Figure 1 (cartoon, one colour):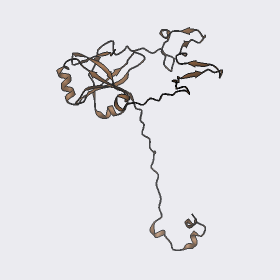
Figure 2 (figure 1 turned 90 degrees about the horizontal axis):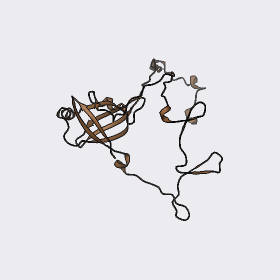
Figure 3 (figure 1 turned 135 degrees about the vertical axis):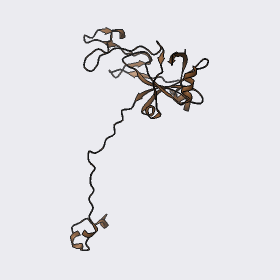
Figure 4 (figure 1 turned 180 degrees about the vertical axis):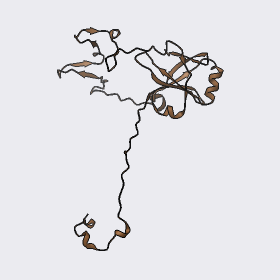
Length: 209
């Protein structure tokens, strides 16, 4: 079942259904079916560390243990920083309205790599002020967290001629590097040129290459 987000702009709220757009929707997909000698469909299995035991699909799982080796649940985990300090968690973006009050330019959007793309399906008309902002090609930025956690992902909302879109992204850490001082390429002047071949007797003969 599709989930809905609630947005707020200039004091007006509206709901939008998330319709995920994947690469398969854009470009299609190809699936390879592997079959055995009897034309039966092959399935994936995991070879255990003993080199003999085959574990079928669904036979493995991840778990959490403490320093004493005791099994613990996910609810008992506490996020910590690299300095060993507890980190505060943020709620899911589905739990409260998302405030759209910050706009950015196209360059800021292009400084991010898109990880997820959603089409926002709105039942009814958009608020007039929000629609007016979209008509001016405004791009709204906000923090998005699907399930909640230790931080938000940068997300953007904008409109095209066909639909309203939401992009969940990762900020690109692009660093430009250069030499502290440009190298000087020295060349011999014309006045220094000589027709005396004796100076090049021990030089490299390019005719030998």
